[in-house]
Image 1 (cartoon, one colour):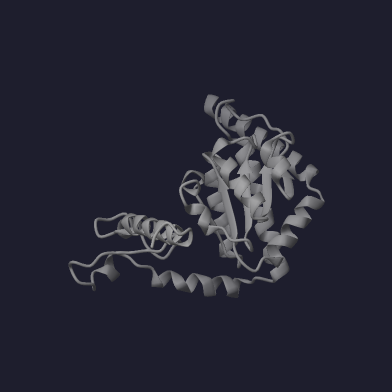
Image 2: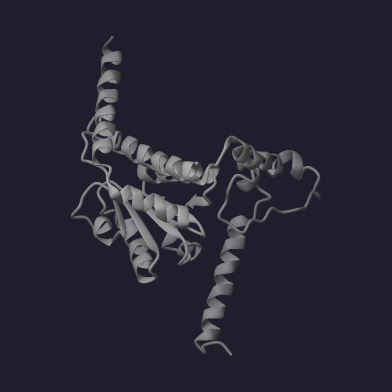
Length: 248
């Protein structure tokens, strides 16, 4: 009985967060959906910690309903992964405080390159809020337990689902379209498929990774993905040196 009481308290706090979110939806939400609909490239999401997990889920939902999307790691972004983001992309950053240090380089990169930035954030005085082209505000919440994000991440996830479904409905993305995407699951590289390759074969991938390969292959002994990525860094450095006349 004691545990059920705690469960009800947690759920009540999260329900209240969703009710407050519902009340605060405004034209910024319409603008965000309109831009996602118009996007001719990719929708890229990023967050840190629990917000990063929410970013991955929203990206997966968008991709499942017809909007090319993926999430990136904030820490990896500062070590070369910013190159995944082009000027035609839309960048959605998620941070409850809006002051997460790992996101600062990404914010600066987006602003400098005039990449459309949508911020999902709670604090209006924050760096993320001020830097965002479209500001989606999460109302302040009481976190269940008072230690880890609970109600705030529930609100973030609900807002992401709302973006995805609103976009899906406008595009008239149907169950038939979803089945067409699902059909590609059978083309996944797995242990059985790799069994047809030579014993000394290796697995390479250009990154970022999607659902086209299983964990045991991507992270297995035959995978040279990270060495491949490192090799690209050396090539990129050489090209830059050549362009600046340092390598002849």
